[in-house]
Image (cartoon, rainbow, N blue to C red; front, side, top):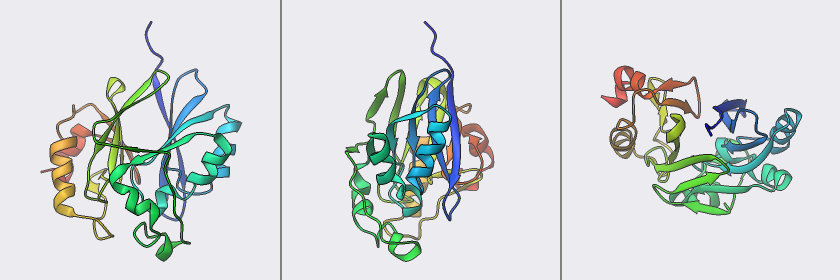
Length: 212
């Protein structure tokens, strides 16, 4: 039986206008929520109004503008939080995740820490965690290979990349991650970044100055 189309919904939230994504198959009510930037209750209520329930919370990295709605959303939904293992230091330190400087001190303990290449299965939704260090020490992307969807966090933007001047960042590592992990994906893969508009791997291969 053919699977229903994978849908990617977006809620933009927080002082940094973070793209928070909810992923589901057409006709289904359970969603994977990625990077709850702020106000977990608002996120939960908005989804509930649409008839959705959160079955998992995935983090692309540990910066404050991607994590500060996590605990509230977990409490309200009962969903587990999954995060890249190398970014544990960010989640546990408000100075490293920059919440102490930009907002209010915030720390978090994920329910499960992920390793590079680890596959996650939620119902008939399957994704692979691709570790892409550079923006942070443990930045990652989530690749829904069967559906041609990449959630790129702050690793890859439309015609740009995430900043690397914050704690644990490295431009050299980021360029290597993009070249070795993302530019090897098919051109038609749709890319959903943590900020800004959507794009494709093929477009970025041609027009992104950081991908040359």
